[in-house]
Length: 304
Image 1 (cartoon, helix red, strand yellow):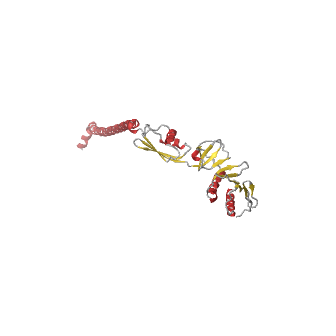
Image 2 (cartoon, helix red, strand yellow):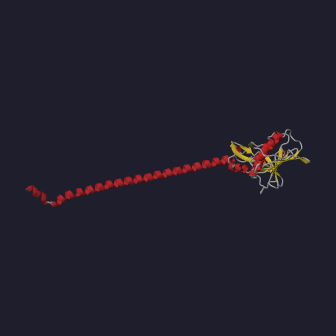
């Protein structure tokens, strides 16, 4: 009983003993939270510093590498060691090295790294005689050009005589060394442009037929050398030595060739005075001899 009274005699003191304990606990929690915030802020700060330092290092590294590459390229682009001293050309037969280098423009003494190989290749491909080409650097001071030339196949006569390749491309003026090539006469060409394909299907078939004629024994000593489109739209072939003429319709070249082989089989001996053989008819062949016509052997039914 006395103990209870003692406890309630001084309630203020008892509260003071309890209240400070509660305030002390709150301050401790606040201080812990404050320390955590401080540590977190410090961690974020150092992370930012680390990131910034990394970026600065990368920037410096990129700058140093750029300077190194620039100085290296500047050295390679200006060093006399890498000036082109030798140009090797392979695959040229009709074109000379001088003609090709005149076409490309200056190459020697140019820096090998600064040469535009794509532009050089494109330029060479524009030459009428060049079918394909490749250009390669040979370090430290050489360039290699490998090309495939077009092959002269025939001549075609317009305002002057030009050369054609086996794909029908117009190569240039015909010279004395092309005199043995077949000559095409009478075919119209809308535009004379070197490198342009001017061969028509009829012209191509005519050239093939000419080649077939020249494979026969009859033409071994006197080959067909001229193919002409006549005003009445027939193809006239003419031999080189005796000027024997053959007329064939452009729409029946194969039939005309077969008929000629039939005529050869019918001849016991090769006639020496033939001037013209007309194979343009469907059901007959006409042979004209020099100074007179042959009535008996000049016509015949077509055989299959």
